[in-house]
Length: 261
Length: 275
Image (cartoon, rainbow over the protein chains, first blue to last red):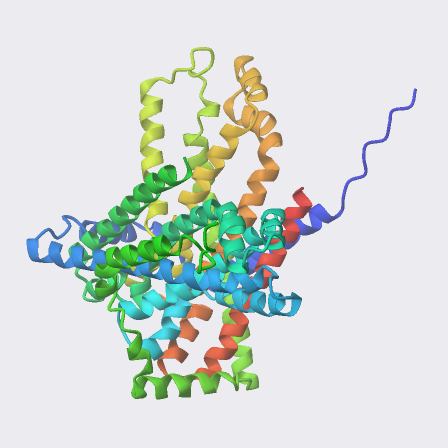
C-alpha cells in the first residue's frame, strides 16, 4: 500500500530564517556592543552603586510641589493635545471619508498619513523652532501626530457608518448639517469616543517623555535632573510619571465604562 | 402648524453650552500648558520658522550626506534588531516562569503551591516595572551609564521589550488550547517538552506575528531614542534641528518616513505569510 506523500516543504521558510539570522548577526557586528563588559564584577558593582543612587527618592516638600506642577503640566498637555487633535481630526475626517469627492479624499488622506507617520517626539523637536521651548510646543506636537491618527480612524468610522438614515433625512428635506448630526454622528460617536480615550492614554505616555527635547512637563524635569546627576530627584520624577500614567488609565477606564454602558 | 426651526440643528444651543462648559473645565489646562497660539505669529519666531521651512524645500542631497544618512538608518535598524534579540533572551525565560500553563501543581486541583505563586508574582512585578518605564527614559538613564551611542539604545529596547514580550507571550500561551499541554503534563511529560509539543504548535503563529509587530515598533522607537543621544537617525536629526539646518532635517525626515513605511510593509508581508 502506498503511503501518501508528505506535503512539499516550502523553501521560503529556511531562506527567511537565514536572512533573519543574517540581520541579527549583521546588527551586532555593526554596533560592536561591548556586552561582555556588563558581566564583569566591576560592572556589577558600578550598576549596584548607580541603582543605589536612586534611593531614597527625593521627598522634600518644595521638590514634591515642583514635581506635582510638572505632572499637571504633562496632564494638561495630553488633554489639550488630544482635544485639539479631536477637533482637527473631525474636520479632516469629513473630506477624508469621501464626502466631497474622491480627489479631496485622496489628498486629505495623504495629509493624514504624513501627520501620522511623524512621531510626537519628532514633531516636538521641529515645533520647538516655531513655538519655542515649553509645554506649548509639546501640546502642538501631540495634537499634530494624534490628529493624523484620529483623522484616519474617524474617517474610517464615517465611511463604515450605515448611509441609509442620512439619505432618508436628506430625501425628506432635512438640511445637510441636521442630517449629519442626527443620522451619521450618533452612529459613529461611541466608536469615536472610544478611539479618543485610547489616544488620550497613549498621549499621556508620550507627553511624559516629550519634555526630553525641551517641550515641558515631567520629561523636561527628568532630563534636567539626570544631566546634573541628581539621581534621587530623577527617581521621584520617574515615580511621578508611573503614577500619572496609572491614574490616567484608571480615569480612562472609568470614563469608558460610563460612556459605553 | 408649528413654525419650522430656523437653525438646521434643533439642539444647537445644548451643543454650544456643552462646548462652553468643556472649555471652562479645560481652562486650567490651557493655563498649565502655556497655550499661547499668538506666540506662533510673533514676527521673530515667524521669521525663524519661515527660514527653517523654506530650507525644507531644498532637501540636502550631497553624496557624502546621503551616505551618512543611509549609514545612520542602518544603525537605527541594527539597534532595533539587536535590542529585540536581547529582549527575547530575557523574555523567553520570563515567559516560562510566568505562564501558569506549565505549572504541574496546578493539574487537577487548579491551585498553585504558594512558593511557585510567589515566584510568578515577583517576576510579574519585575516585568511590569520593565515595561511601564518608557523606553525613552531607559535610554536617558543608559546614556548616563554607558555614554552616548547605540549601546544605550540597545539596552533600553532590550529592557522595555523584554517586559512587553514576556507579558504578551504568557497571555498568548495561556489563551491557547489547554488540553494538549495538560494531557502531556498529566502523563508525566517534563515541562519543556509539554510546552514544545503541547502549547507551541497552537500558539507559534501568533507568537511570531506579535514579535514581528514589536520589531516594527522597535525600529520606530530606536529612531526616536536617538533624540536623547542613543545613536542612529534620531541623533543626527536632533543635531541638524538644533543647527536649524532645514534641508538636512527634510532629507532625514523623508528617510525616517520611508524607513517606517518599509518596516510596516515587511512586517505586514511576513505576518500575512503566517496567516
